[in-house]
View 1 (cartoon, rainbow, N blue to C red):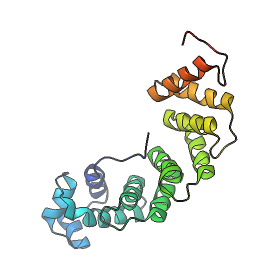
View 2: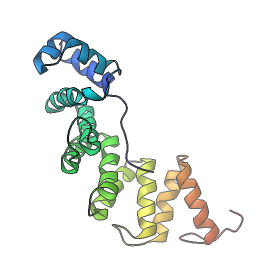
View 3: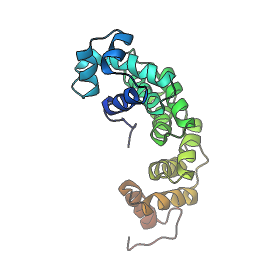
Length: 196
């Protein structure tokens, strides 16, 4: 399992433009791109040269409080699309979206902390995944369970790991089902069940 990648921002931008009562032409003029370029971005036909334009659009939307735009900006900074890779900026945008309730941003932030940053910040990552897990997110539950198994960012605790993995498995997250089965087979954190 790795970092969350949001889909194409075109639909988000289309909704934002409509909500702001702007036309595509008005927004294109405002940000200094051609109408054709903006239309390609919105319709998902943008080539690699338009990530900078997408960044400009998303920045404006994020500055106006659009939470999904904050998530996309975090992804652009994390992946270096249209901007220089900047994990600190990615973390900032993911945090801004996360505190406004965007669960994908919460997961993206957690993965950024435990996979991309150097040095890896397992303590903060575990805290972020705990927040998602406590809100019932199966990925958050699974990752928190794995962190408990390995003792990364939290004290190593097989029973707590099994509890979080069981919650994720109940939501049919296959990685959690497989990991939990291995715990049962080995009697790790749960009573051994050799039939598993």
